[in-house]
Length: 113
Image 1 (spheres, rainbow, N blue to C red):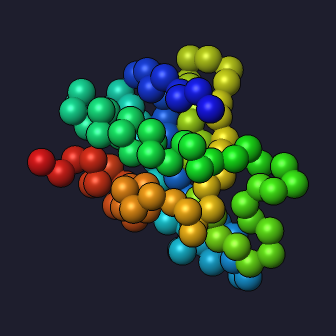
Image 2 (cartoon, rainbow, N blue to C red; image 1 turned 90 degrees about the vertical axis):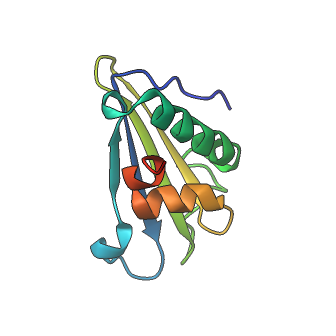
């Protein structure tokens, strides 16, 4: 899978979904605006996504995450000046620890010194 270019017009959104019952509070939606990051923070975000993207799948496939009670992370990257976006699903059981931390802490994860 080609890695997305995180230009200043990109917005990264993360959420945890799936499971037996949907509880909005547990989704923990995160929104990261690339233009608001320093170069160092942007590089850290790229490293985290680099670890997670090989595990991601497009929605709607027969083997896509989310069947039954399986939890998964939804990763969406939207470019505000282009009419395009990327939507990927990552099984919770396979997500790298750095990606889970990004979901839990949002920008706080990449803003650490």
